[in-house]
Image 1 (spheres, rainbow, N blue to C red):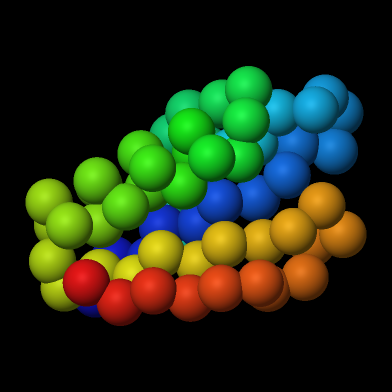
Image 2: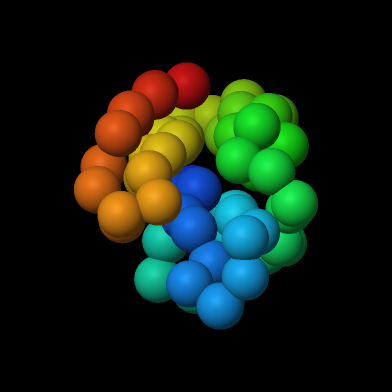
Length: 65
């Protein structure tokens, strides 16, 4: 199962979408954009999970597809 993660970029105000244990896939300006793209990618690659973190790097949500 692939695990996609939305995490904050500590160096900017952006948000990363990345595949677990790999380099970031993409950097987005907003968390909403990153989550939307993460949902799209997870749905295209079922079974998959999307794990969403907040600005403090705490797990906030986990969605399965």
